[in-house]
Image (spheres, helix red, strand yellow):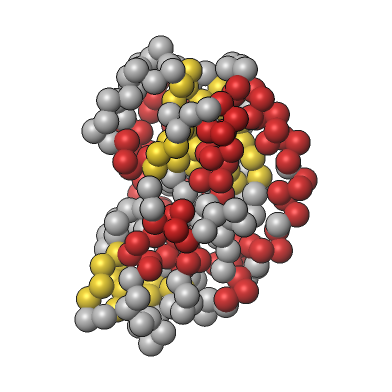
Length: 252
Ligand SMILES: Cc1cc2nc3c(=O)[nH]c(=O)nc-3n(C[C@H](O)[C@H](O)[C@H](O)COP(=O)(O)O)c2cc1C
């Protein structure tokens, strides 16, 4: 079983490719909570890097998974540049559950947070071609149930940036807010939110306290009403993986 967490489809697209290669199924990470996965031959975790670490949602959910130490367990992390502490974190959580990580690797893709910093994620589409051979290698490694790690070890900066007191101050630049002048209350943001953190109140989207900062709401909003870092969202800077459609993010 390949479990994924994804806001803009990069991790979903890769989870799908792995599943296709090895003949397995995919499932959103959150759906796996409460399910007995101990009989699975392999357990894959595919997720992005956020703020030099695994998304907080992933760090919250992995401890709850019911998985077996005897499965071939692998992690593939998508990132704009570096994974920093993402593997270190999840490997540690798995170890605490008695599960030994068999294999992990990373793949560079367009950075879904780029627009928060004035850049266009779509202009990074070149990464798909540049890193296609690496992805092919990852797919073959997993199909062959290879063992090995391709990641940097513990990163003190990543650790520091994710201390709750520091994260609360620094990570607001990628926390979406709804511009209620633009919001028409269509509810697409609520449907794509993997955290079920968005509700509609008086016909406007309202974010709760459980935002994973995946930016699904921002990138899929047809009215560009979700904004980050005080910047108006431009339609040309909205991004999702080219092989992932809105329906893929909603239906499971
Ligand atoms: C809030 C946020 C923080 C991010 N932080 C990092 C980072 O620290 N390092 C990095 O290389 N990429 C970072 N990225 C880029 C994502 O890891 C990358 O675009 C990923 O593939 C998104 O996956 P998804 O499409 O499955 O959501 C960040 C993206 C977001 C939304």
